[in-house]
Image (cartoon, rainbow, N blue to C red; front, top):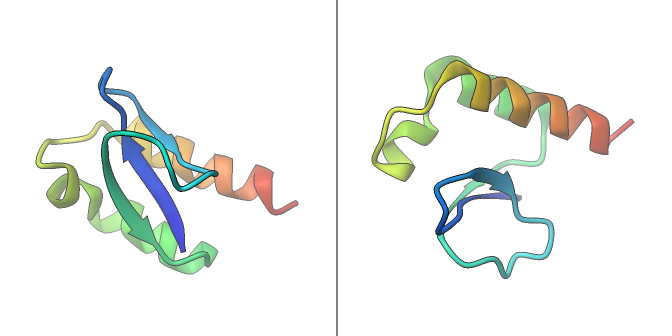
Length: 68
């Protein structure tokens, strides 16, 4: 599982340590799950706000960069 966090400063980032402060959401560590999360904008509900498309794209790019 990948942890994505809305930090106290409002930025959405990957939490590689699993210990960052802020509201967190978990996504399956599979590119298909991540792409579906982005397509359906599932993190909006978890973070209780509307996230811009760029955030979802950066999550997909970060995952691909991490796993290549």
